[in-house]
Amino acid sequence: MDSTHFKGPESARSAVRWAVTAQIFCAAYLQFIEWVPVFPWNDLANGNAQEVLDGVLLLLQLAFAIGFHFRRRWAMILGTAGYGAWFLLQLDSWWRPYLLGGRIVGPTWYFARTYKFLPQIDQRPTPDAAHILLQLLLLLVLIMAVHAWRKVARTSTPCSS
Image (cartoon, rainbow, N blue to C red):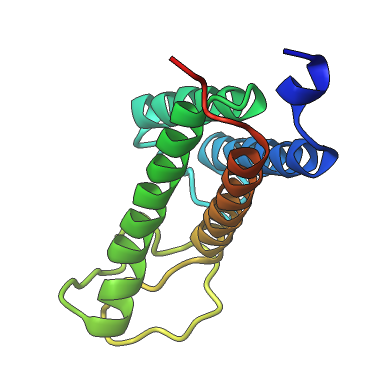
């Protein structure tokens, strides 16, 4: 197999680079807002309540980015599914209660003092700017991942057994 076949056309390489870049940027942003106090963007006055989860997410994000970099189809699929599940969890935990109700929060809620530009609706949790940016980054990662997967799938041939 020659090197051009392995690497695929430039469009696939470019799509993969963009997908990896988006994943690394998303990982860096998450770690930044979870560990660096930049009030009112985040509120770490009471510490980071999810240190272990943040470490696990960082490892997963780096593993997915590496899988994309090396164009491992199974890793690309798993990574895209993982980011999709995370995005859906974000929508379910922030936007469903904000728009439809079902959960109330008070003035001592963990995100009560973070910056928000959306109007408060009753005592529902209002998505803060830090999480909205995270959700937009997750959406960008998903778009780039699907695009990269499609480009890679079009440029490679299945292995013969």
